[in-house]
Length: 120
Length: 109
Image (cartoon, rainbow over all chains, first blue to last red; front, side, top):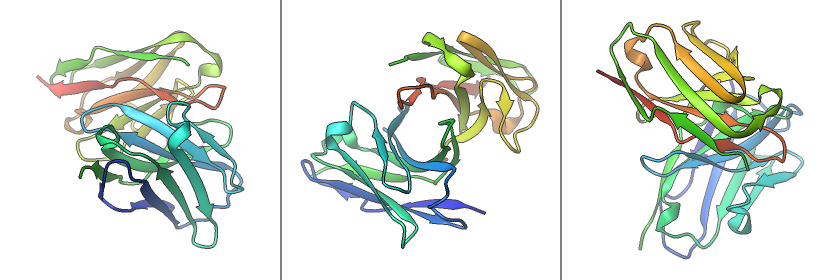
């Protein structure tokens, strides 16, 4: 069945760029029915939507993060990626990749998540 | 932006009891575009309910969602040991903006 797996550095220095990749296995990222998204959760805190991406490259970002976020897709590798620039300690969080439908944006499939710590 | 307020923040109950969680939205939600998730410690969230009242695939029928407008509820009819977790509501309406509630923890009394 379809699975999502996040990967990337677990430690990023302040002011640098956080880069994560989500690999889609058991299915194609080029499905017409779904968007692919990122959600983060600071330890002990609530969930925060970062942004969503369609396989064509069309993106939607959370306005609160829009100036620092870029999402992209690599169809040849069945992956999509997240870049978050100018990170601070406040960006320390678990990052989840997830899938939602084209028309109803609830997340029906999640990766297991990866912890990224921002520290020098 | 629609703000979602969940209450109570913590619910202390015993296995077998009924749990009712509330999610109030700052504006009326069109088309009942509200979802509920369960998050167990150390795990990713899991979709329970979408469209305010439609159970997701594989979710036991002891979970039920209800409500409309600005007031929504998730009810767990009889708590099983694995149901003690944190629950989040999420609005997915227009304007391509997704927002989550602050979460509600169901803990063992």
